[in-house]
Length: 246
Image 1: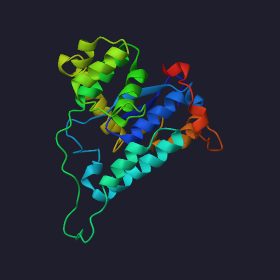
Image 2: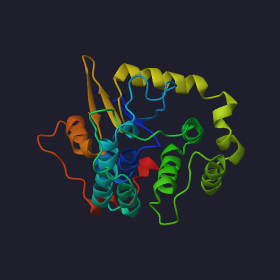
Image 3: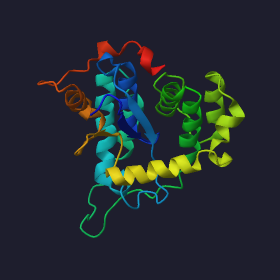
Image 4: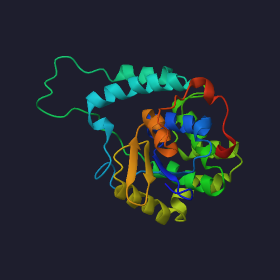
């Protein structure tokens, strides 16, 4: 990886694992000098081509929130909401799983509202701060209650708290200003083979190296630094937001 290149960091505000990764990367001194290209990804063909939808598999969904709770605790984040969600996805007893794949039929999720609001915030130099605030509100990391971060009213509240223009933030998804940028991000995600988030891509001259998952951050750091050992990202090291992530 050249000094000028950045690690592509694909995320979605839908994902609990992306939320935990974002929290850790914003605060970990191990990554303070690493340049990231932040790419919110929500394909036009939702989970149709390259991205998997975990809600299509009840087995996977039952696991996700239990694992998210473990990973949140490791990062020093509240885990109660993840544990409560895990309790809702117990596998039904006596079901014949051989007949069909069992999952949840989800309503339409307009994540473009939130992702393009992020692109506006990033344009104003507050991408990391805005994303952190959205994840915190979605998963109640600050204990103030969880809210629907696809709701423009909630996005407006977050924008106001951060000193962003509320109307510009809320209407970013209908303004047309970020449509081409977002479409190019989707195309780049397809080219990089993104199938879930968080997803990281280190681009070298001759090849790419990719990592999937919050729990792969030590491996990502090892690859970036050419270290011979895996670093440990402790809860105690995540007390302060790094100056490079404000």
